[in-house]
Image (tube, rainbow, N blue to C red; front, top):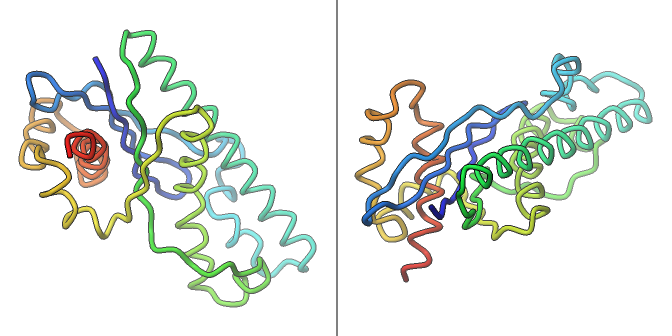
Amino acid sequence: MKVAIGFKAHSGWAAMVAVGLDDEHPLLVDRRRLPLVDAREAAWARQPYHAAEGLPLARAQALVQRGIDAAHRVASERVVEALLQLQEAGHAIAGGVVLTGSPMPAWSTEQILAVHIRMHQAEGLLFPDALAKAVAGCGLPLGLIRERDLEQLAPSACPWADEIGALGKWAGPPWGADQKHAAMAALVLFGARLH
């Protein structure tokens, strides 16, 4: 089956949902929680800017960069692993869609660390960015959707939006907002191909 994958990232992990279409109805193929940090580094790597707060600038920059590099490495490993498992099960991957937050200016690490809310913004973009690079690095078509735009986008780009709740009833827990949004994002990829 041809499947599309949606990702909804959090600090240090992501909800991943793979969906396909069966007789023009969505079918849940896989869902999982992808860890995006190494367990032994999770205490600080989930929030590298917060971990760097109060350190001398050179050490802060090095720690933040180490966190960014680790997030990209782990995201790549986890995405490749998930894609290989889907392919081994006989599925063709149509692409991946990552839900993102609002973009932020190209602040330096020093500028981010100077304002607490900027640390939250930077960390909120770190893991979606790592996932997007991982999907693109696999050579797959990549879609980026701002999460706050998903509900308005869905009726026109995802004709199956009303069926997403039924996927969750069939699958059972966990099927919360993260999984629903990741599934909807993945189905937008199929919807875009219809138009």
